[in-house]
Structure formats: structure tokens, C-alpha cells
Image (cartoon, rainbow, N blue to C red; front, side):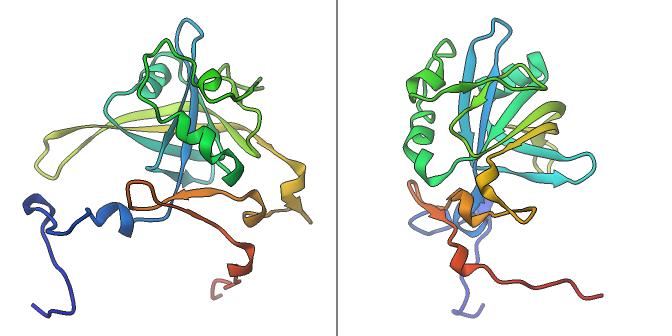
Length: 206
């Protein structure tokens, strides 16, 4: 094989200092997911395997490696919120990564304000510029090509309400760069931001 390329089979190891998988599929939007358990205790956690999957109805989803509190709460209540992580909220988001007991309220841990959601029970991050309120559509346990189940769970939810700061909308268009979304990169502590100066337009061919 040409020395111009590094090839590896994941099952045999990548042979590099750091696994390139997360770096290649990157930068990735962060799913900052808020839920409540059956007793009403709030939970807030970030997931870097997150994205949008459908227009009508609007469906978003995140993947949890391990059956964590977010998945458990959504399975029990059927509801969650996605909260946009902006650059000013980076440190608070990082605080909610902490491995704490399910009884700990990460909103309080990170010094965040609970906003009252309109279409679902879980609160949202009041400081966030964008919130999507969601109702569960599916929870899918992932599996490998050999059929063996992974300890990874994909959660999908239909968006039932969207809250956007009006300052992020101009001439009817949501300004992505102005929202300063924080994006996850490949390294252990690597993140990216979006700069509006890097925006370019390319329309689809007709």
C-alpha cells in the first residue's frame, strides 16, 4: 500500500498515538441534554455523538455510550430538551461532564438557571440561546456487523418546541455563527468554534 496513506482495521488497533476516529468525524455538535427522572430530579449532560436526522417531523438524536441517567430518564418519562452549547457556556457545559450520582442536579452543580419548558416537563438551560423540546420516538441499542449488541444507546426525539433568542435571527434567518456554537473535536480536550468570516454560499444545482 502507498506510504501516502495510513490504513488500519479498527478491530486490530489504529497504531497511532490517539484514535483518529473522533478526529475525522469532527467537529461535532454537542447534544447538551436535560431530563428529569420519575421523581422530578433534573439531569443535564453533554453528548458529542449528536445530530439532526429528519425534517418532517423534525427529529434529533444522541448516542450514549453506556445506559446513563439521560437515557434512563428519557425511557421512563419520554421527554428531553436539547440546549445549544455556546462558547460563553463552555465551562458550565464541562462541569456537567462530571461523573456524579443520579441524585445530583447538574444545573445546580454548574450554576445554571432552569428554564420552564412549554411542551415538555424537563427544564432547559435558560442561558442557552437555542432550546429544542423533544418527545422520545425511539431508543435503539446499537450492534456490530456480527450482530453483537454494544453498550451504546441511540435516543431519537421529535422536536415539539423550539426557543431561539431573537438576537440570533436576522431577516428571518438563524445566524449560526452569531450563536457561537461549541463543537467537539477529536482530542481529549479539543473543541472548535465557528467564525462567521468563514461562511460561504454554494447553492444546489437545478
